[in-house]
Image 1: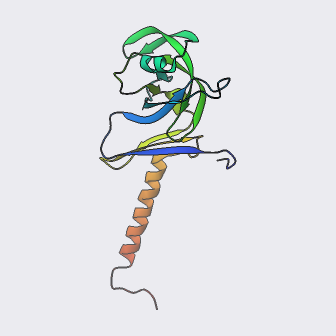
Image 2: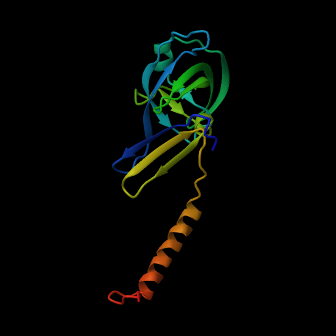
Image 3: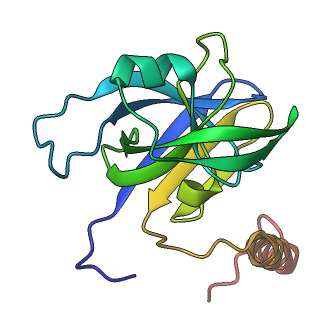
Length: 178
């Protein structure tokens, strides 16, 4: 990790198993050329199954933004032509991701205003962990550590085996000091 690059991270804790990861976020029109643009608070659904980030029609209307192009969008409901917009997104760690191209999705009943897709998630480290039923969701940008759960479990197992061996070789009440 390069210590000269600022790192931004956040962790949310959930007391039980979660089926959706929804965090706070803020969005605005791009600040390049619009330095006084105001951010609007919204909720963001984090979706590793979404290739790109998307915005709801309600949030498009609130921002008053115009489409910059259209794309063919493949989604759970099939295929459609979707308008594309350029926005700035502020994540819970206060990191501004500027000039994000987002396509418009179907309205989601106000549950969230944007979907954070793999275009943003893959820029950093993203994990869901915890001991059942508690869950922790963490995101760090830029990537700062390689997490290898296989190696971590092997190291844990080796530590447990070493501790057991030490206990077996030194039963209680048997002082090995001379």
